Image 1 (spheres, rainbow, N blue to C red):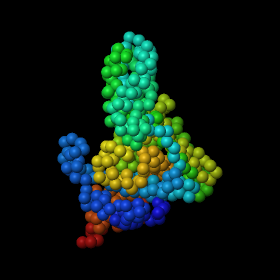
Image 2 (image 1 turned 135 degrees about the vertical axis):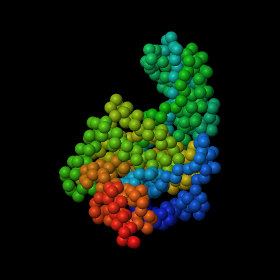
Image 3 (image 1 turned 180 degrees about the vertical axis):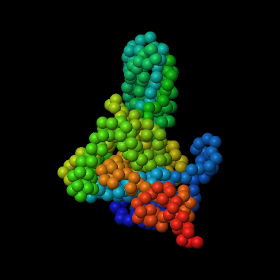
Image 4 (image 1 turned 135 degrees about the horizontal axis):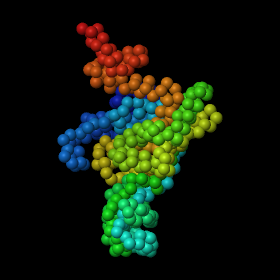
Length: 423
């Protein structure tokens, strides 16, 4: 079944879910549908097993982006977000690349860094040499902590060592390079780093202070590229504005921060939906954007005749095993909908969504601006806040759209007029 669905947004939530179930070949059970629709929702008891001091649950809307073709395969993309227009923008942008082959991705591998900070060293460079001399013993000790991971071809693979001047001394920072395969890997990395601490202290004569993974996963880079049909119908001025808006994000960190936030609107929504760590992904992405010493765009855009080619390059340490991906029933079903058999596939889809999100934002900036489309979709939220009941929402949005005014006062005035009409 194709993900290219016209009018998907016009369907009811139940009809949309049936389309997703059809795409999965009927592999969604009635019980799983009940979980997704909230009839058997995530319970406080389940939440109490996941985090501390639980008093309740905060539901977040879960939607699916359509029109996505990634590495030749159509997919519905589950996205969890409270922000209107994000899912619509991603779905809209994906249409412009569907007929040109969709998104193509690549993956640098699943290596994570575990940092060990060694202080109180008289001769840090000598300590560095000694660590390299004992590399195999350190790696063997680390791998003894997780034989299951090693059996799947993962585990500690190498060391990367730095002498870092800080606080008036030169400290040694050892990076354990650990292949975590289809797991995000934080627990495995931290366990190995802590297990290696006594041996490292014995070898160096120093004191290990910090031993924890780094969320700058620069050996877990995902790249996604696509050719987008021009949405500007030959309007050269808009094409130039699109490319100019991108160039500002390369040159100006104030613009780059908002530019990259838009990319993460899409990526973080898929990360959250699948039960992965949104904070780790956000931290890694923004650190990577500043890796050159200047914070800049995570995407790159070029003109190719009448088309626009785009590429995103971003660290994505996401997993299919462990954590909320397996323990949260809705996250588990979101991963099932995504049909990602590996962390590599999952990360590639996430990067593709980020690229689509960025295309949609630049397209809007080159045209009528962000607010027109966003506020139209945001109008339902505003109407609810202003006191509209469920039967009035569609009419309020229709009138506001006709007037082209979406301010809170205007929305409230429309509701008052409808109420007076009904009296």
